[in-house]
Image (tube, rainbow, N blue to C red; front, side):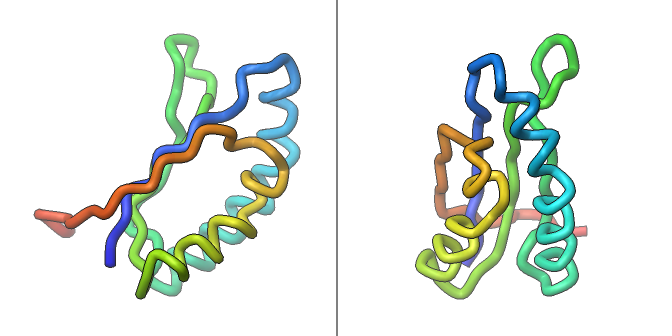
Length: 96
């Protein structure tokens, strides 16, 4: 099952520092998920200054429970980077 994740960072003065601190571990885990076929596409949401303020991903997991298990352990969640997360069922219409 595919899911669209939209996750916005906190807006407090320490938000960018939390993102920077958690980013290497988040990218490492995302690379492993990509290699395993779970991440179809992902990237940062930018503001008008081209600063990262969130993330968006299209992922594929066997169930919502499997997605939730991964999400609960992602460094951006455990590091309190993502503070507003929306998950929606999704179906890609076109694949590369």
